[in-house]
Amino acid sequence: MIESAVLWLLKFLAVPTVGLTSVFLIAFVSATLLPLGSEPAVFAVVKANPAMFWPTVLVATLGNTLGGIVDYWIGYRAKVAFAKERSSRWFHWLKRYGAKTMLLSWVPGIGDPLCTLAGWLHLPFWPSVIYMAIGKFGRYVFMTVTLLYVPDGWWKWLGGMSSKLFG
Image 1 (cartoon, rainbow, N blue to C red):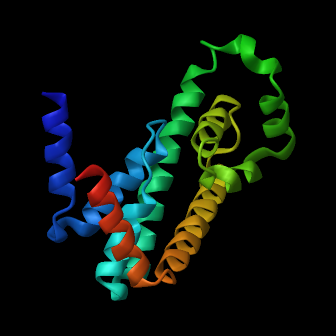
Image 2 (image 1 turned 45 degrees about the vertical axis):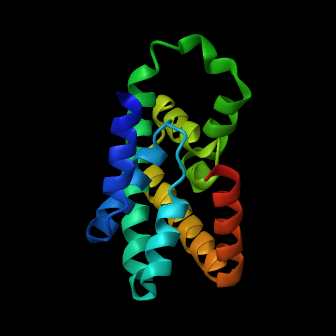
Image 3 (image 1 turned 90 degrees about the vertical axis):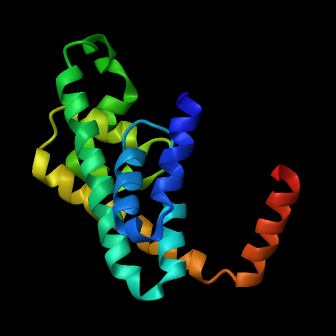
């Protein structure tokens, strides 16, 4: 039942009429501690309609930043529950560099936990959000521009290979 619900959701989010809504939702969910990447959704919308580059990047940045804020507040509220972990090197590093560490919120695997730890350490909220947004915006611009320079023939070849392997 869960599998069919997930498949329905993915099919719904692929509908072109909800492109920016899909990008927002996927970017938001991927910024939480769930393992989901939002770059393929951003790239797909921009590839289908290049005129949507900036709106798509901005919507993805907003969704991903709001997801990072959720991580921040989870960490903020969890501080008491995990007080014994304060001696870890991550905490010392975050305390030393403060909100600027949120520039690394875009890094896969560590970015989302960094947002959570920032809340845990009660780093200043608005500076953290601003640095978080800058980092995430830079990632979306870089990744989307980079993917747009990949020749279409390569994407067609990759699609043919994946359908052979998984189809």
